[in-house]
Amino acid sequence: MSSIDTDFSRRRFIEWFAKSFLGVGVGSLARRASAAPPVGGHAKQVIAIYLRGGMSHVDTFDPKPGRPEMAGVRAIATSADGVQVGAWFPKLARQMHHIALVRSMTSTQGVHERGAYLAQTSYFQTPTISHPSLGTWTLKQLGTDNPLLPGFVLVNGSPQHPGSGYMASHLAPLPIIDPAAGLQNSTLLRGETPADFARRDALSRTLSSRFTSGTKNRTAAAYAKIHEEAVGLMRSKDLAAFDISREPASVAAAYGPHTFGKGCLLARRLIEHGVRFVEVNDEHNWDTHNDHVVQMEQMTPPTDQALAALLADLHERGLLATTLVILTTEFGRSPEINSVTAGRGHHPGAFTWWLAGGGIKGGTVYGASDASGTRVADKPVTMPDFNATVATALGIDIAATEHSPSGRPFTIAHDGKPVLDLFA
Image 1 (cartoon, helix red, strand yellow):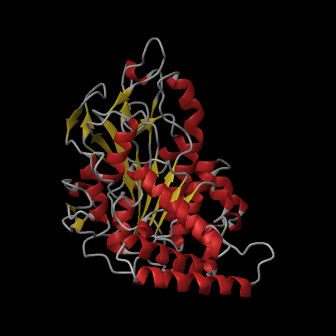
Image 2 (image 1 turned 90 degrees about the vertical axis):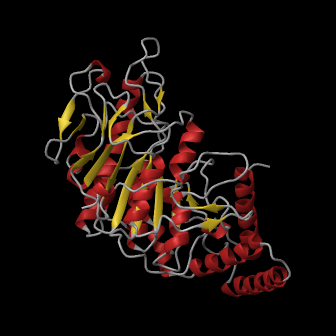
């Protein structure tokens, strides 16, 4: 059985456990006792935007004006002096003064699953171990500001997401499939009274206590912890954080009616309520092997709208200073357009990620690709380097070591070095 199968088997067990004994179905809730982050970081929370499939860099955030690689797409000015982006992102262009573009990202992984795994864990995918994601590492090191809410939430995530890896199950993200539906299965079943629930809760706690006291298996203890946190969340007024219908119509309209916009709006609400790490995956697949321009015409408007609204909203509410927003994808796409498919292929050699808020120097560009966007020409940055930068922004000691069940030592960003020039 693979690590991914094991992780999802655990989640299915948790769901069954909650429904059987509590009459509810709640996914993997995660929390660690709140602790002050080490000195040095301005960011307290993270919103990680992931564009699955590999977004093209040359006609989005690393444009090459006038060159054939742009496939006729214009480069447009932004709110940051001298910084241009592709015309696909006119609304986000007006928020570029908040953003630091890293145009010198590079990787060796040109396969989707391996590229995504490296992006999310800083480690190469192997059959012998499942590494924790950046969100799990963050929760493990810093805990969460709100003990009644999960510390790590994954919105519209992929089944291949590494989750908590070898770390305890209670550090796995809480998966939200439909951001408009709130936290489903978190209320009493129809016809169930509070007394019924209390009786089932007491029985499950008794059975769990007897079992965990007789075993050293940490998974059993994690299930008990998840049970306890699920009950606490059900009884908390902070459960409303998951209800985006409480937002004014004007705010909802700014983010857009699409799933990605609703996911970004949910992320902002969760950040307001003290959730440490929220990852939002775009519902689109940026794997534009065929008809690249046609697909971009369809995908970019909702993405542009939601991202621009998120940054503007965080800034207006005074949250951007302490919330680090990052945008990542598994690799770039080939600068040349295939003459047969009219698409772009996988291109890990050079691509762009970006950061905003949380003490990052906005309105800037770090590194560069060459004239065609094929190779990194200046200041290469690896995925572990970028993740080390995120950790540093949060005040996490990137040298801090955690051990797998087999005793192997690991760090949050493997051998990555933070890009200190990105900080204000």
